Length: 86
Image 1 (cartoon, rainbow, N blue to C red):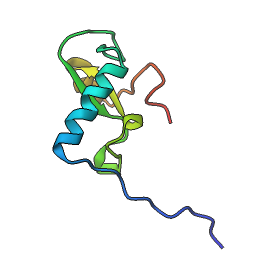
Image 2: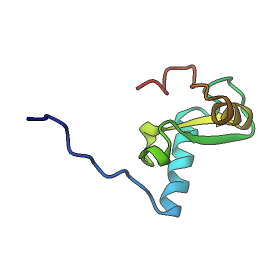
Image 3: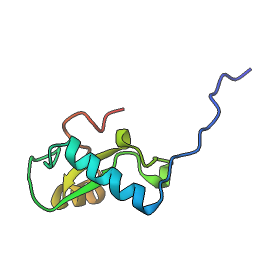
């Protein structure tokens, strides 16, 4: 018999709740890119993508500057501070 855990639905927030969560993530991360330390052009990145059932939760989000965010998506590089390691 398989001992697989049942799949849990991903958390997907409504737009207003998602905006609040973004602000909370930026505050938690000190309004600083978690890869390079930059303080401008910040965005919030899903560590586990929504397309792979990553949810809208603080544990799955990280603050990144625009350049580092683009690099992750284009090159596939992972955040270097350990947050992206599950």
